[in-house]
Image (tube, rainbow, N blue to C red; front, side, top):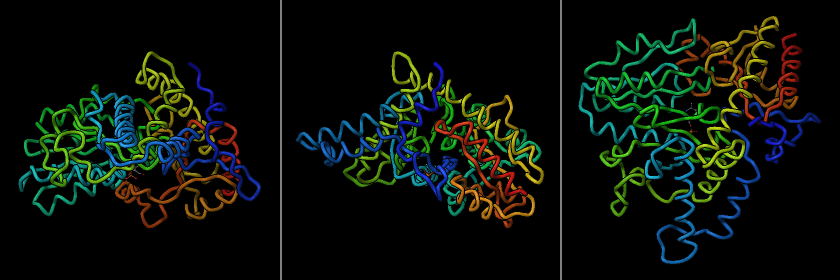
Length: 407
Ligand SMILES: Cc1ncc(COP(=O)(O)O)c(C=O)c1O
């Protein structure tokens, strides 16, 4: 099924915004995507017709239960999970990951090792670093600066008999690198360790299959794929039930609720379902999962094409330095980062913003990577993110503006 970006765009009311007379171009997706009308409507519908706390003996409470269950089913389809019981929700990825790390940390003893990477967003590093106070050793898998990829040879030597857990990112939110997470899972399991994957940056762009990956945990965030601010945790069936999570005494101690503290944001869960259904509607197939797979089969090449257009265009502008793996045939997130020689990324981003091009600058919390690139005290990079609602002419217009700013 061919992807129709104009039809997709028409679903998003925010895309008609103008800035200083310029149409807004939302290249800020890696920081958070725009939402379609269906997601907005789902929030309204929740508050109008199903707003209650869960597990009550009356209609709106039953509907609130249904809202949560529907979101679990939709997220399970998005991730290829075994079923809704494998999906837990939380405030955002970071908060869920701290809860997960705290719980896993309680099962470890001093001298045990956890592997993190230099490529990751700090949300997939800091929760594990916090285990150092329990005597857990943190081992860092380095990034290869020549290729902007994880050093998998180093990963192989880092993983050993003391490794208990590996926290790896699926895709870099700063430079677009996609890691061989299936291989990390294989290596981790061979050493008897569990593996969690931060898929926040990967999830909006390509199909995830947690069962195929065989990972133990995977986290993502709905606001990166056209939904509201909701964190999603996949746990391989059986694993969460064993973990000593923080929880209140009356809480259901089984998966998926075992790690969910307090009342969830039900309206946002309704919106999460709508966001996943919006993705699915871009594809076709006999069920939600098949539609999502078919949608990403169309969305991925579209976004990749836009990223390639931008990469090649920027590469031809004197004074522009690109960061990250080249956008060519390989699997890559459609996120392109660059600097203009002699110019501060924040100033470049502000000047682009004034012309309606919304791009991010800085380290995007991928602090270690930006440090390793020698850019920590130089403002990091300018980051341009593709989304299926971006058009080729917006990429061309952005290139024109960068050319002018680069002077
Ligand atoms: C790769 C990656 N991981 C984790 C996070 C944190 O996600 P959240 O804002 O849901 O805590 C982000 C947010 O930008 C991200 O890009």
